[in-house]
Length: 180
Image (cartoon, rainbow, N blue to C red; front, side, top):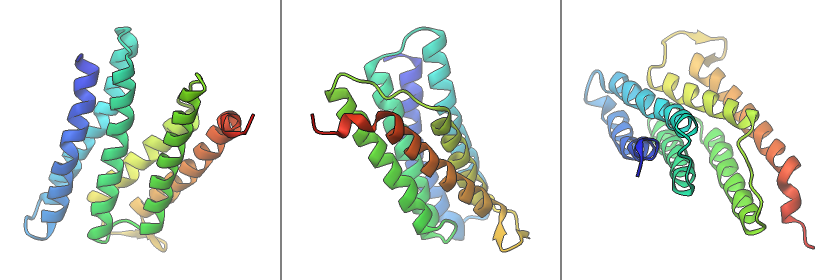
């Protein structure tokens, strides 16, 4: 285990803390704000672990696995709890989680074929918008911007980037799914 791997583990361990804080928001005045801070720290570990692993040239198979799992755990757990408290749309969560499962499956098949599916710029954009939308939903500003709150507009952008990144991955790497 190295520092980047520990950062991914920290992201996994912080997810239930974020979830508990969001669920406690009805009982504790600042729970949403604290959840936002913890979520932001967890999200920042995603950028830090990849950066450090590349900078220190200590990328590992375990690290790639932990990073991928940690991202999915943080996003899925946060979305599910936000749905429960009425701050996220279930249809958006379905698209986001479904895309994660589909791309994870694509990567698994590609690995069986001795291929790799590297991260794309669309995937990185998707992550930024998802993290931003989730964080903003936790500290939702009171004012609506037209028919939606700011976090909902950002969630719409996250769904857009989620769909575009899925299309991009399957466009470039979907050939591994074809029968030979």
